[in-house]
Length: 338
Image (cartoon, rainbow, N blue to C red; front, side, top):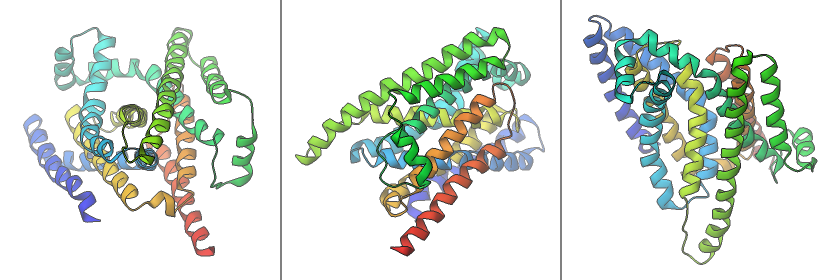
């Protein structure tokens, strides 16, 4: 098991050293305090993204070894530098109408102003993420699922034959949210939600075509494809990370400390994903996939709610762990009966 977490442990040690010296540089005497903040942020990221690891493993199993390796190498660079640092800076750059370089300087030197612009972007961001993740969760339950966990409910969902019901339900949530938000935000909510749905539909359809082609190639011994599934995984990771990135500013205003803490958490999530794939955990514990998708649906609803009411990250993370943990226990009980 150590080999799966070796890189994560190295990044943790390097991250703590970097966080300590950065904190001492910014405010002498604050090094150990920032170490605790960094540790807390990494735990927050792992807690919020534990179900993300299960979803990653579920999709990663369908990818070729080459693309699995790329996701676990290139993907971590996108996840850490792209989503945990560059993405929020880019969003603030758009809303503040400043250049990217000036925005990075703003994030370091004028934290209050940077946080203000990020707060303005909060509603469209979480609406996009909520819509995308809701489509991910609903698509799973409306498709063929051989391992029912909560049998009555999941069987009911599977028997609903209305076409594009997942889109209709997601659109309904977007509409409901608009009744509780100020009028000037409603257009942003509608556009962000529709873009989230559209992005999921486009990427998932292309992924489905690639999966079919890949299955034929695997039969012939020449597995190919994977870029769109790689992109799909990155989009899921991006949607998951929105909650952690935005919520982290309630814990620290230092973007460097935030990036280091979330990066450590993201590395452990990647290591956990690799462990789940290599140990074929999802095939052994058959209800984990359902539990993770329940957690995704819960997170998507919370993201919609957060457009009008702030929900503490501890609640979000706890609900995800409850669903994943309960499905794991149910799987263990099932395996003992067999």
